Image (cartoon, rainbow, N blue to C red; front, side, top):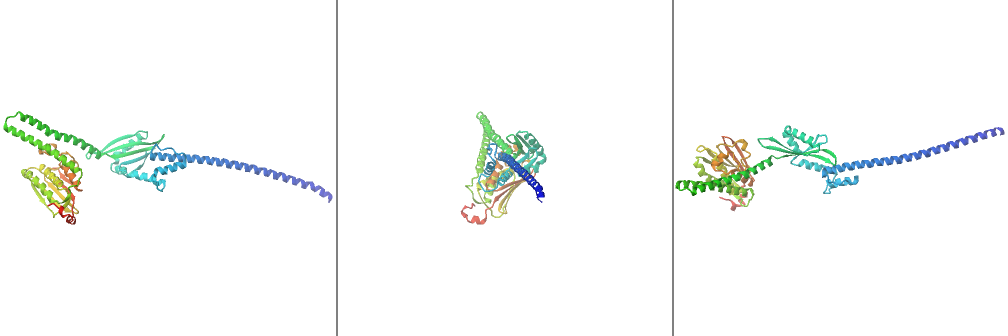
Length: 444
């Protein structure tokens, strides 16, 4: 037994010694793993932080880009992402209302869509990405005509050049569009093109009317003055009494013509001012009867009958002098442009809904359709040679139009060349109960 025990003891001690070495080795391995883990975690954190900073910087740059697109190149660059977001919110919502930034950006988009001029956005590839309603309306009516112009504008402006173009759509109606394209750039980055489209037909027409007015008024004043100078110089050296009388009569005619032009211009200026100082409740028959009385002598000389058809008593609130002038000018035109001995003029007064409708028709030479939109312009004459023979100033229908507008009314024209002309005036009617409240203002 003793011998056996002595042989086993070293064996047991040897096993214990090997176990201790394994434990020490495992402990050192765990320590190394922990160190590597912490080093990896620190590196991962640094890398994540770096990537986050790069991402934030990129987002900040994108937001600054949006700010510059929305508000212009003068916008200052943000110091950090938080500053960029707060700046964008303040700039797009200057009133300080509590609503998301995207809502404010949408408000800017809605503002663009509300513009009366057409706006088109194209991206950097030349594709159209947005049209506001005004542009869609223009495209819907004239797509084939403007497609080539839009393509040219986008292609050229994508190279960094601003471009302007004008395009006539309809020569008969003088419809004309103006295009302005502008490259959208931020620093050195080109994002696309914005194109503005404006219908300049009315502006062109007004410019032409203004030029015509200056030319016409110069002619209308110069012609009678020149004639009077020549006639008076001839008169000075003339001894024949009959010729003196004829020359004197011609001078008087030219003087009356000059005075008529000046009076019409003065009257038109007063009416255009829009003053309602002398408005009062008036029976519509009063100015119409007055106008007929003024025109009847000229109508009789040409053998033209004036027929009046009246409805029940109708009243309006207005200036009876202006209404008389408008009706007289229409009658005067009808007499001038109706053939002698074969003409007739019909005047109809009737109630229509809440308005008074006055229709003045003749069987004269009529007005060409191409002139329908221009006859109410100052000094416009369908046939200038005939107007000079008849002594017209070219202001009569302009006066009529402004009188009607001054009384919140409407005027329309129906005419065919060789078949006569019909003018329809619609004026607001004054009701009976309104008349009773102001009985002293009724003119009889």
